[in-house]
Structure formats: C-alpha cells, structure tokens
Amino acid sequence: MLRLGRPSDIWFKPALSVIAAVAPPNLILLAVGRLDLAMYTMAGSLCALYAHNRPYAARARVLAWVVLGMTAGLAVALLAASLTSDAVALVTVGALLAAAQKALCDATRLGPPANVVLTFISSAALFAPQTLGQVPGHLGLALAAGAWAWLIGMAPGLLRPHGPERRATAHALNAAAAHAATDGPGDGHARTRAAAAAAVHAAWQTLLAARATENRRALERLVVRAEIALAAPADTDPKRLRDWARDLRGTGPVPHPGDLVDDDELLGVDAELATGRPPLWLRLGPLAPIAARTALGCALAGYASLAVGVGRPYWALVTAASLYQANITLTWSRGVQRVVGNLVGVLAFAALVPLAHLTQTALVLTCLALNFGAEALISRNYWLGSVCVTPMALLITEFAQAQDSGRLITERLMDTLVGAVVGFVAAVAVTNRRAGDRLGHALTAAERAREHAARLLAEPRPAPGGDLESARRGLAAALVDLRATADAASGEWWQRALPEERVVAAEQSGHRTLAATVRRQGLLLDRDASTGAEDVRR
Image (cartoon, rainbow, N blue to C red; front, side, top):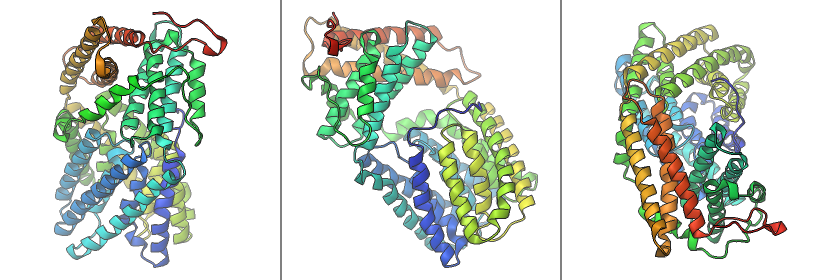
C-alpha cells in the first residue's frame, strides 16, 4: 500500500498549472491586504488540476463544467453558512454535498483529483463566517479565478495542439509492446494483456473526444496497430511499436505504418462516434451504494469530530470523503495511505511553520511550493502527496489570521484518525451488493459481443461497411469493462460468490476471437518487414 510507483508521465503539467493558476490571485490579494479572501479565489484556481489528459476541444468543455461545479458547491456551502451556524446542520449539508460530488465525478469519469478537491473547498466554506450579502462577491472571486484557471489549462494547446492524443497513443503502443514481449501464458502475460487493453481503450476514448482531423486519423491508425498487437502478440514486433511511440514525442510528423494502405479498418471508429454515451442518470444508478457510503461516512465522521470537541469538523469530513474507492479493499488501502501521509505531513508542518510565520509573503510562497510538491508526488503514491497537502491545508487556515500551531496539529491528528476510522466503518456497513450484478451484466455483454464477432467471422465474405471492425472494437471494449468490473467486485465483501471461472473463460475466448478477427481482416504485421521476413500466414 505504501510502495512508491513511477511518477505519471505528465506529473509536471498539473504541478506547474496549479502554480500558474494560484500564484497571481494570491499575490494580488497579498498586495491589497486581503489575503483572508484567498479561500474563494483558490476554489477557482484549483480547477487547473483537472483534465490534463483530455484533448483540448474536450478539455475546454470539461474545465468549464468543473469551474461551474466548483462554484455551485461553493454557493451551496456559503448559503448554508450564512443561514445557520448549527454545526450538526452544516456537517449534514457537507456530507450530502460530498456524496453528490463523488457520484457525479465517478459517473462522468472526471479523473484525478476527482471529488476530493471539490469536497475540500465546499466543506471548508461551510465553516467560514458568512453573511448573505457577502455571498455574491465571494462567488464572483471564485468565478474570476476559475476563468483564469481555464486559460491556464488551455494554454499548452498553443504549442502542442495534439499533445494529449499523441501521449495516449504512445502509451497504448508501449503497453502493447510490453504485452507482445512477454512469453507464453501465465500471470505476467495476463497482467500485461489487461494493462495493454486498458491503455488501448483509453487511447480510443481520447481520440474519440478530439476533433476529426487528418492528425487524429493518423493516430487512429497507430492505435489500430496497438489493438492488433494485443490480439495477436506472437505475430508482433515490439520494437516497431516502441519506435512509433518514441516518434510521437514532441511535435514532429505522426509516423505512418508502411503496411497500412487504406482506411477501411477505421470504419468502426465512425460507427462508435455515432452511438454516443448512455445518459447520466443511467450511469448514476450503479453508483448509489458508493454515494450512500460517502454520505453516511462523511456525516458520521463530522458528528464524531464535533463530539470530541474539534473545532474544524470539516477536516474529518474530507478525510472520510477521500477514502471511498471502487471497492472496500481499495478503500482500506486509501485509508492507510491517508493516515500515514497526514501523520508525516503534520511533522512537515511543524518544521515549516516557523518559516511561514516570518511574513505573509513567506506564507504564500510556502503554500505555493507545497502545491507544486503535492502534484509532483501524488502520482507516485497517494500518501506521498498527502505529505505536502496536509501542511498546505494547515497553513491556508492562517491566511485570515495567525493560529496556534500546537492546537492545529492536535486537531488535525484527531480529525484524521476520526475521519479514517469512522469513514471505513461506514464503508463496511454499507455493502455494495450491486457489484455482483454489474459483473453479471458485464459478463453477458462480453459474451454477446464475442458471439456477434464470431457470427461475422463465420460468414464466407467480410461484412460490408466495417461491421467486422466495429464488432472487433466492441468486443475489445467489452473485455476491458469486464476486467475492470471483475476487479471492483472481487474487492467487495458480503456478497454472493463471483463467477470467477466464467470470467476467465469469457476473457480467454474473447481474446481468441479478437485474434481471429485480426487474421480475418488481414491486419497482421510482419515480424520484421525491414529484413524481408516472411509474411504472417492465416
């Protein structure tokens, strides 16, 4: 749970973006002597953390919705704070907000940092002294900072307008090469196959969200090559895939596979573009148990914090909200990571607070450095990022006025332990029995997709209009969803036995059918075209 992984390929993008988004508003407030308003500008500035893996056309829409969603949550919190000072009522509002934010972020697949930042802002605002007359001005500050964060998020597109698509394609090629390089069946082969399938699926989702251009078409051809390698790894040269991935770095021309002569195999992409996504309400339904966990856990954590006399119950609420993952096993892991990170972070705060107390300028600069450190480290492991997030959250409380450092440390430690323990107990109490149902649906969908592809394979001539290609890509997507659903269900407790043998059989037969469709379409690559090796038969 605490082992450090490799940093994200784009760790520097959110790290630099949050500095560029947070620094100007904070420095302006510092210059005019109103650093107490920084909480409202940071609500908008922190939107710069989102959507760095999305194409710029999609990023513009997603960032705009994030800014509006952040402002909406802040508005509810500020209205509640201005209408009542009852702590129990405010904790209840915060818990309901946290549940709604969790469900919406998961249903829309917003991506990191997901609901945690939204909940942090709205929960803190609940306990900020407020009057109704101040609410419009504070929301205006958040919207202005959010507009600046939107510009920061879109700015890299001026230099690399297709950067996200190129990175996603390169990742798919490298993952497919890693799978092709593994020998024979076994756990390692299955793991690389699942990782490659997920990377290819993510690349398709990225490309489908981009504008239709010749550049996107060229990248689609490369993702098709990654799919082919996934379906028939023994017939693939990993070096060719890695070379193409390396050529995608920078802004040079997109490599063009020499053995690809037409666009017939891309007809399935056009078919997928025409289908659209299920409506939001259908995607929210399966998330009801997770939303219930979040609401109950956050409420109980806040109430418990109030019962032990902590003055900032929103810290316990946010701790509980940060725990909830796809299943109980992952939730336990996140709880351990959160507690360890916060404990080390409190020690970091004790070391940094003398420096931050020198001047308000030093306070602002220290928080900026911690912002950068949090985003630079969190992709290696959540607890490591929390080491920076914890002292930053403690120092932000001093923007309005100096605080007693000893009391801050004590309250943070208590809220962390209360929030983690109560939040996990709530996760255990609210079982997610729908996980088994979702696995059954995913199994059925994968088996039907395989049968559909098999029927097309049985026809004497390829079906017109790219039907076989569309069926192949539908089967690949169904297998990715099956593996993700099976992983989520296997981490839950108190549910009926899972059909593990049926899952394994569906995956094996599905991947065999994928390989057959590749051979039927004649898309196999030469093992070594540069040296004139024989073409792959069948």
